[in-house]
Image (cartoon, rainbow, N blue to C red; front, side, top):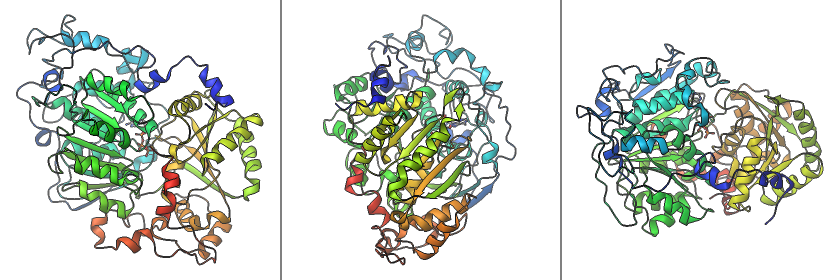
Length: 634
Ligand SMILES: Nc1ncnc2c1ncn2[C@@H]1O[C@H](COP(=O)(O)OP(=O)(O)OP(=O)(O)O)[C@@H](O)[C@H]1O
C-alpha cells in the first residue's frame, strides 16, 4: 500500500476509519438492539394533520414565480420552538416522541399520560441515552445558538438579494424562519444545536415545497445549504409517519427514504449531517458505499434503517443480494443530481429507480438537487418526477460572488513554480491560528500522485485523493487535510462535488476541467455558507474550449476578466452545448419553459473544432465524464 509522508502523519492519528465512517465521533457504537420501526417510535398525537394541509400555504395557480429578496421580513433571531402558525402538528408543544417504543425496551413505554420524555425508565429514554451524541459536548447549549454562538462566519447578507425563481403549479410559499415550518421539536432542537439561526434561501423555498408533498428539482449555488434543504423535510416526514407497516423479512430491510450521491466521501458526509439532524428523533440513518467492507454495512442495516444514504454501485449490490428492498421508499433524493444522471451513472440510477421495486413517481416524493443543471439532464431527470416544481436560487450553474476568481496564463512547464509561489503566499495566511487549507485540482490520478510527491519534497505537506487510492487511504487523506495536518490536498474530480470542508481558503485549478460545470463545483469547495474564498485557475492553450464559458461565468459573478482571456474567448466558439451559457440571469432555467430542444445538437454539441483553428476537445459532456474520468468516481 502506497503511503505518502502526509498519510503517515495522518496514520499516526488515533482516530480510526471506523469512527469517521460511522459518524460516531470515535465513540463506540451502541450495542445491538432490537429494531423498532419508526411508526411505533414516532407516534404523534392522534389529532395530527397531514403536512400539506396545515403548515404550508400555497400560491394558487402560480406558474412562474420570480422572487427577489424573498426574505425581506426575515428575523435574524428566530424564536425556536414556538408554535407554528396554525398550531403544531405535534399537539401544541407536546413532544414528538410521544408514545415511542424504545429500541431495546421490548415493550411500549406508554402512549401518553404518564410516560413522558423525561421518564428515565422508559425504553425510548434508555435508547436516547445510548445514542451517541454527534454534537459532542455542545449538547447542553441548545439555546446558546441564539446568542453569540450562532454559526459564525455566515454572511447572510450575501444571500439577501439573490434572485429566486420557481416554476410549476401551486408553488408553496417560502418561509423566512425555521419556526414557521412545523418540523417537529426534536428536529428543531438539532437545528439549534447546529447553530443554524435562519434558513438559507434554498432552504426557505425548498423545505415548504417538500413538506407540501411536492416533487422538486432544485438548483442552488455551491455551499448554500442544499443538504439540510432535503434532509430536514425527509426527517420531519418520517417522524410524522404513523403506522407505516413495513414488511418483515429475515434479512431484507425496507428504508423509507433513499439519498443517493455520486461519491463515497459525499455519502459519508451526508450521513454525518443527517445523523446530526436526526439525533434523538428516532429516525435511523445508515450509509452504504463502495470500497468499504460490505459485512459491516449489512450489520448496520440489520439494526434498522429509515434513511439510507448510498452510492449507486453499492446500493445495486445490496439490492441484488436482496438485502435492501425499495418498496417502502417514500422519499428519494438525488444529491448532485446532474452528475447522477450523466452518462457515467444514468444506467445504474435507472436500474435503482425504475427497474427494482421502488414505487413510481407520484407514489413517492422525488427531489433532485445540484448547483448545476444542464437542460439535457433536466429533461432526463423529468422521467423521475411527477408534477414537479423547479426552483433556481441564483442563476442555474452560476458560481457564487463570495468566491474571488482569478485566472492566470501559465504554460504547462511553469505550473509547478507558479503553484509554489501561490503556496508561499498562502503560508502567510492563517485561520484561527491554523494554516488555511488549499485544494489543488489536477486532471489525472498519476498527475495527482506526482504533484503530491513534488510538493512534499519541497517542504509543503500534501496528500492526495483520487480513484486509484484505496478507500482507507482516501479517508485518511481527507481527515489529514481537514485537520490541517496536511494543509494541501491534491485531488482529481472525485473531490469536486459536495465536500464541505471548513477553512478551505484557496482552490487552485492546476489543470482546468473541460467542462464549465465541473469548474463551478470545484471552486465551490471554498466560499461556502456565506464565507469568502479564493479560486485560482492556470489557463493555457490546452484550455481553449473553456475560454468563453469561463469568461462569461467570471463576468456574471462580477469577477475581473483578464483582457487576454476575453481575446481568447472572442476567438473561440463554444464547442458544444455543455459549455454554452445562454440567456441573462434568468435565461434558460426550467427546461419546460423553453419549448422543444434537440438533444443531440443542443447538448452534446455538433462541432468538434473550434474557430480558433485548433481541435477543440470533444463535447464538454463526453470529455468531462469519459470512461477514464468516470473511474475516479464510485
Ligand atoms: N441555515 C443555515 N445556517 C447556517 N449554516 C448553514 C445553514 N444551512 C447549511 N449551513 C452550512 O452551510 C455549509 C454548506 O452546506 P451544504 O454542504 O449543504 O451546501 P451545498 O449547497 O450542498 O453545497 P454543494 O453544492 O457544494 O454540495 C455547511 O457547513 C452547513 O453546515
